[in-house]
Length: 281
Image 1 (tube, helix red, strand yellow):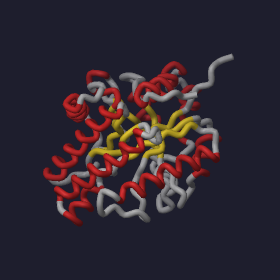
Image 2 (tube, rainbow, N blue to C red):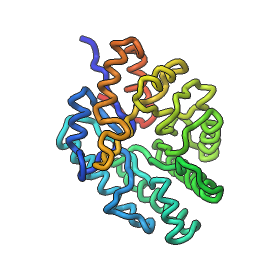
Image 3 (tube, helix red, strand yellow):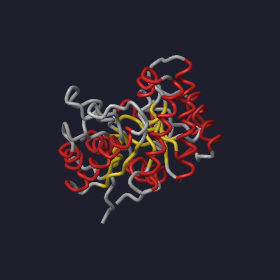
Image 4 (cartoon, rainbow, N blue to C red):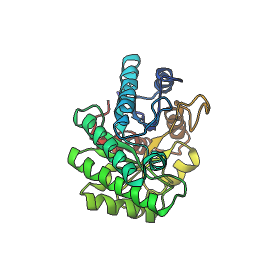
């Protein structure tokens, strides 16, 4: 009997105010088997100082527990201070204190990772839109602090940044090297379909489950992961992609010969297991 192909969504958000567990059930019904529940800001838990992150992280962890209780999915968690929050913190208390708050958020995430409640620091990095050089510098310092922390913990890091180019991947690789973190434990969320090893410099691309992107990515290498970046926001239903997208599209692409089964195994099992040091069933 052929082995069942695991289906892994590498970057998805669920929150109890909208679909929550029901969204995870949509993913499971479509054939999904595992996901990385990635922390994101909550409107009801504003971040004005570093200690506020603890309450926010506990909400994400509670969501993960609820999904596990309501489904048969394997649920893994990434925790970290969302990089755009740096802008608000800077306005409230100045840039130096904002950076300190972000670092405290990373330290709090590290505590939960050390307890085995999360497998990655993320999503962290820098704003995806143009900002001043002082913000970029501060965010890069925080990114390196996160990678040093990940090295100490033996975990992965999930990056939120502008769309990457080979030069951007080289920059991330350099930061990882300074931090002593293996490059294959650094994930670029919402990546462009840049997958050739000479272009990614060892960083792991995580690509939206859109056919044009995936077909382009597969011209280079299957060494990437798939994501929906579903944000579970009642103001933007279905954004960025719906929770059932990854399993539905993966099956369709195999049937249409866009993707081979061998490539699907690399994307959905080999890459997540190698990157996060997890075991997918």
